[in-house]
Image 1 (cartoon, helix red, strand yellow):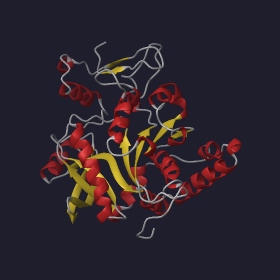
Image 2 (cartoon, one colour):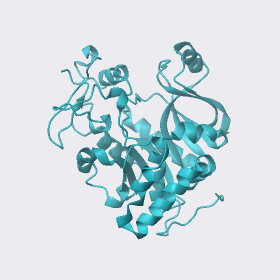
Image 3 (cartoon, rainbow, N blue to C red):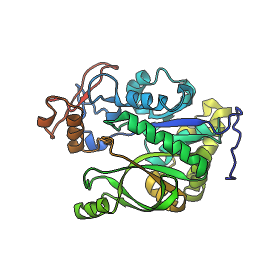
Image 4 (cartoon, helix red, strand yellow):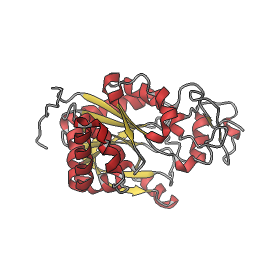
Length: 332
């Protein structure tokens, strides 16, 4: 894309948006997250400390950097009973529903196209809805710095790399390269779930945890899809265009029936290394809650009095009712 803002259909140019990812199945913890009746509930609709779900907490995080009318959330049709309450405050046009889960390739692109239709020059931060931060202020400050970085690195994708406090081999790592602009660094390489010894070496070399939180101009991300997954971009762009003119056709659902699974990190980012920058984030108590062990450690950091003794074989007990929140890390 040209190095300039592009006017969207409604005339907005280069405003800040947030994209909240909430369509995942959470299969790694599916055996630990259940409600009465045995139906698995994705962790983004659960709560760690009681009260709001993790999706609701992510929406609050987004509201600290953009206005609610510029928060777009992607969700799964099969999770409707859970997200319909959490997203009641968002405009209907800001809730993008996937017919089924085909990985983060389509899961990222579909809502990005929804934003592009309204503001192709948008600067968007991508926030997974199943993460936890002990220090929310540090997380929000990092997101704001990532937005600011796009003013200098207009066609780059800025990844938030968390400074590790241990050589966790179950996470993806980013090895920063030379300095690019301000605090931004080039990305030398990705290492996905390294052996413990390699993780220790990466930590000593200044490696960072890959948080999957990123910021970029939506036009940049669309361009990367054009280079790496052009058939996916064509299929979903055409389907959304059809649905905008003929809503009864449900072209997006038909397109999803023919699409293959793809992964945004593997199929787009890792094939676009020259466009990537990483912003080191100080330790902030971040966790993606991807394993029972990380879930228990997160609960301990949040000062639950019983957290240190939590079992790891079954960490969740659910509740009945569409609004009731299963509590992650509750003793059963």
